[in-house]
Image (tube, rainbow, N blue to C red; front, side, top):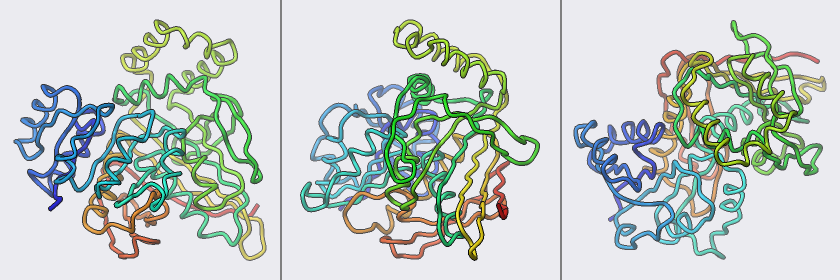
Length: 375
């Protein structure tokens, strides 16, 4: 009987928090996995042994004997192909992906239950962005009779602690070209172009954010049917945001193609703290309500974005562990709805999950807010 949970990248910055949350509910059944067994063992000892260690490299073939007892695999690392996910799903092991690589998630989304022999469910877009951003967008759209566009803005604190994988992903995408959907048609955009002023609320006020390749803007036009979606990024340090935008115009993408320069940039982002640990997410949905043009705003702000990423992920993982939907590939907004409640994260399973299970988690130092404006 399948009972175990494996978290690949489980001793990393976000993965370790996910392991602790899952292990608290299912002690002895959660494994922190990665290529470095020594780090996995050290992390296991720090939990008092209720999270177990496991050596498992994401690029290596999975042991079929292992999958016979594993009920769910959580992936916290970026991947290039879908072989590991397919092996899990074809063996009846559920798969949850906490990464933000839009190209990879698009490949997974194309897997079909019958054609690809899927015997379990895959859940994608799990975390802060994508994840909480998807849920906030869906929530805002529920208040409109017709939605024309959704703008998502993310502010990250450069004074916060970020995992190595997150730092590398951010630096590697500072010069990226990626696909967005505008007015129902696909077009190519570039990172740190297309600036937009966003009111993040509270004392954060208005900041300038720039396009960035978060995968939610590629997913939501498909799952929610919205004609135009864009996601933008800024940092809590206005000076740092402006500096990156200027460097982008001066040829930063070409510079980062040099391995030495790229590695220096990753180290700089990780070592030098040019701000605070605050983060914020803002979703603006534009459309019609009662026949009038309306703007629906949802926001969340707090400290330590890794915490809310882990809590969001752990909440949906535990739900999937207890009550899985039919075999297939889903994004978080297709299975869950968000009930913003002050400083609590409340999720209700919906759609094809159909269980109506409600989960509510306290979020220290995090606040949700909303407002509606006639345009």
